[in-house]
Image (cartoon, rainbow, N blue to C red; front, top):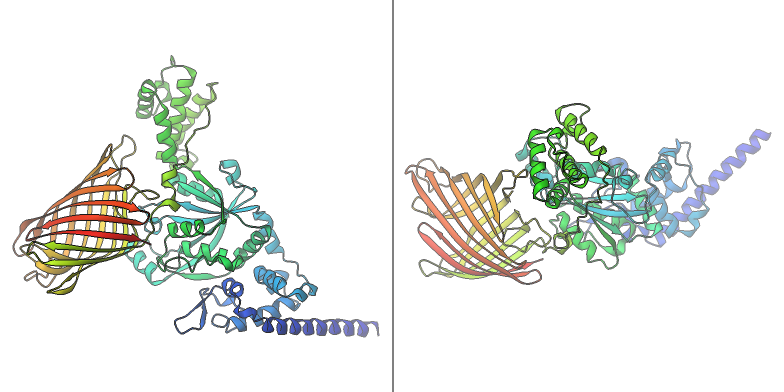
Length: 626
């Protein structure tokens, strides 16, 4: 009898909950919650060209409806019923526990939802406690040309246990980072580029100690880190943490130029506040600096900017602080790798300055070897540390002022449109039309950008001749130039790589089009306002106009002198002298001179003269950055 009463009560309770779930569903449908921006953002739905919806999430388990990837309405119905109905599942498998951000959404939109039951969620509660988030930052790590995936920089999220994010190892050890990156399955650079462009990698969110990323970017790769603390409310932080927890259950097809870290970090923020419209305000081809600039264009969203210098910048500052005698002693102990060679007659302050610089230098140059338990470098550093501990002088903190002009958000926009007018050797007039998808060349203003690098992708130059019509003069899939000016202890090979199409004007191929690839390596030097580089290069060109072979190989040299006056004016003179190996082997030359001035924010004007064997051109161009 008693058992029957309990069963009756239990089933009656289930019927009430089912009725309550149906009532909530009716209210949700009446309020059209499936069409709300918040719901669409939470499930990462985007409109297709035909006007329907498709979620960018690519894991079936992310959806509670079999039609969920393509139907916001069906997914909302399935989610609301699953979240508001109790089951005998393990706690962490219940919809409330798997999708806490959706639960928060329904609680906010449906007041009656609060009367429903609350599930205990051990995994989610552990995740929330581990992060213990008091503030959130978007972190930008600067450009790293030695890794294709980081050539344009990288952004991630920092979840800080401090109300105001702070720099310093004691704080980083406590904080966590949420990173979005491709799960790369190849080490082949060419294959990586192709797979990254067609979405062949899985893009995944991962949470990890923030200190790991600092170690990777600051120390191993010598990249500066910019921390942009967001002005979020406690409820927005709660929802963001919940949504990040959900995101760990799915992956996205990773596209190097579009659905990348820049795009998806803004997608996380759009999910917690649909009024920001961050992803829709970015260009279709998005790079990390675009995301940072978009955040700054959202009034009040950035609360604070912090800067963490790379280990390279710290070492250079240490050496800059040494006087001539201290610098000579530093050179001696670093060359001999023996602290015994340090002159003991020096003052305690001087000895401390030298050893501090030497220890930081070892950390910079041998960042990975230092982590090993034993080894030659580890022994050297240990001897330097012991010697430093025996000096009572306490060095002041290394003071590196935030480099205002290097702040990424202050740079020009990543896309560029150019129009111009010119004339060639035959007195033919022409009009230029140019588009560059991203990002920066040596003549662009270097505020906010790497002044020692050229990084371009998707660059097309068209010429219209009134007599001959429209022609493709140049098209580049990618063009990268990395300069490392000669400095004692810090010099690397400067290099260049390019793949594209160009018009040729020489004795072997006059006014013919040719796909080409080139690679160059050499040295660069800086003299005050001048930057000079010279390289040996090899290139391959393909054209039916090359008799017999259909291709030719060129080997030779390229040299450039770049002059920068202030932040807005640059000019360069460039020349190349290449031996072309075809049916008729001969030397072919090309040289050019350019001047460019940025006369307004995101606008510049250029004068360009180019001479290539059988032809020369002179033109003026107007550029718009957007």
